[in-house]
Image 1 (spheres, rainbow, N blue to C red):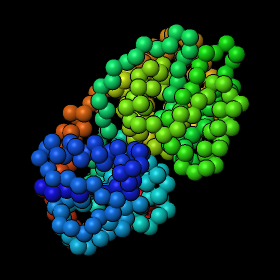
Image 2: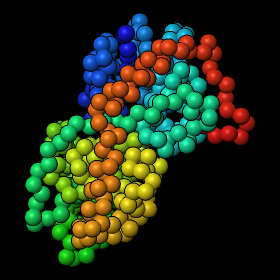
Image 3: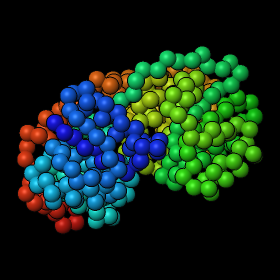
Image 4: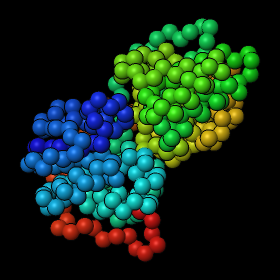
Amino acid sequence: MKIVIVTPAAARVRNGNRNTAQRWAGMLRQLGHRVGIQVEWDGKDTDLMLALHARRSHASIKRFAELRPGAPLVVVLTGTDLYRDIRVDANAQESMRLATHLVVLQEMALNELAQYLRDKTHVIYQSAGALKLVAPSKRRFDVCVIGNLREEKDPFRCALASAALPANSTILVRHMGRALDDSMARQARELMSHNRRYRWLGESPHWQVRRELARSRLMVISSFMEGGANAISEALAAGVPVIASDVPGNIGMLGTDYAGYYPCADEQALADMLYRAEKNADFYGRLKMQCWERKELILPERERTALKALIVAATATSAPSAPSPPPPAGKEP
């Protein structure tokens, strides 16, 4: 089958959407399909479209639905889709109606959808390959943050938290991610100049990100919104415990009973949890065990099987000749 994956992230961009597109393309090729990745659909003949981001890929989604009526059209909902755009943006809402199938990246995402949309939605957890751990530093308690410097990521919360740590803490935070504008880069440099516990490393190749993760004692994900962070999958695969903001996307990845959540945007609460993980072996061990118990969700073979099932389901059912009806009056997407 000829499949086109549409993602708004260009090839030179290192972000979650692009990483997902490239990983899925590889898996689908292993399953025998011919797969191309495009930022915007070129209109050439294809059997199935898989589009990441309901709002930003809307033009390609709408064009495909118009030119290929009845063809399988899969839309993957990202974090900004789920927790912002589908509530207010007409293009994102239309993309969901035009889709023959939807994909979300963690189970809590289903709570954001009306029942008529849930009925055509698949949950596919993002996978990560196994990672060999590096012996951690005996002098420091290394913590990593993985994510571009953008507003939705609340990117400096861990830096602010590290500045509030007690003097006897040995925590050092390393942050890997590209600044999306000059003001974010200036803020990161300013924080580094006043905080010996924080280091911004900028954009790094994937192999270097994984190396930094492997030698870390903890990973922090502080986002305001997440669709299902691949950074968490990488941490689970590496056996590195996670401290996360208590937003639905993180809870969907780590489980409702996970002990490592802090109230979103509260750097003092984050500082307290970082210090507890550093100094309390029982608490750290509990985080490590709970993350190990979630590892099965992010195995590559599980993701490949889920993708195969998605393609089978998408091709087994015909797309509607017209968009699905909107939800009942007063019902949010």
